Image (tube, rainbow, N blue to C red; front, side, top):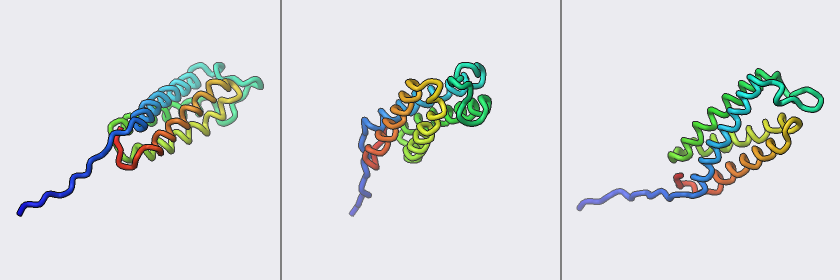
Length: 133
């Protein structure tokens, strides 16, 4: 008698695909923010002439690295990697907190990025546990 092991079918989740695409987009936005902070420091000048934390060079490198990692995690989400879901939640939360530093210079842009980060977090958390993007 031949028995077969039960096959576990993963379900496709539109939320994961949505969150993965937004994570890639948010990563691109953050990498661009980092590049701009590195090469055009006067772009992010607040009314009082300061950034809330660090120097523009340090802040630019931080955002560039976070953006590149977010793009990689977004691709991981889209390919169905389980680790990418939790890394995506962490990085979106980090990006959302980090946008407060840009709030004085570009409030609309910062709010848009924070809303995108919230949507990424929701999409990653709301999808079924065994779902793939």
